[in-house]
Length: 247
Image: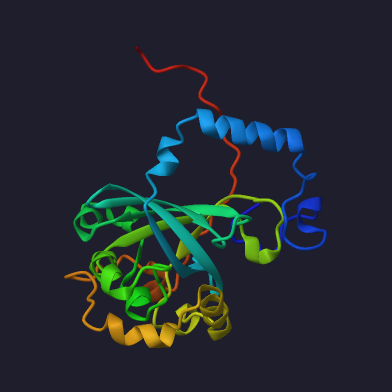
């Protein structure tokens, strides 16, 4: 199966009502056990997540497909963020991928082949597509200015918009909204997001004036906009390494 397959092979994971994952309801004993272990274990990596952002993303192989994304980020250092990506901000949200975000300085140090996998963030921030829920714009603006100069690499592991009830197939590379036909997010998706979060994207746009992108926009990032070529992964059978390196 390739990440660009529009419909997975027939299986129970794409049938049934709603989009809830397959499986029986959680037993009371299991829920109690989960609560108990949560009190005893440190959960240190999760507790490092301090930044919540909501935006939209497009599939690299099919940029006309748009999804709403909620990112929960851990700042590793001034130049690097790592984010868990969900399809909503509810307690029943699906974990659908990961995104790594680096500064312009780090991005420029990458090889051209690696840079093809990354996207810019300036357009989605300037258009108020990327928001920081419940954080006033005045407070969020310094962070937004930093993010507007950054680049991200987002792998989607669950194509939830196909109706899949489990994460099927291989990861799909995602790209950011852009000011081109396929990259302009569908108005109905923006309207739905705004109603859920109680915000107005249009009203936020004036507050984003003066936010600039990278000092020198890299032409390899957002590769699909310039070259009209996307990226799709496929599963390839390969021989396993049967010997360990020495020593």
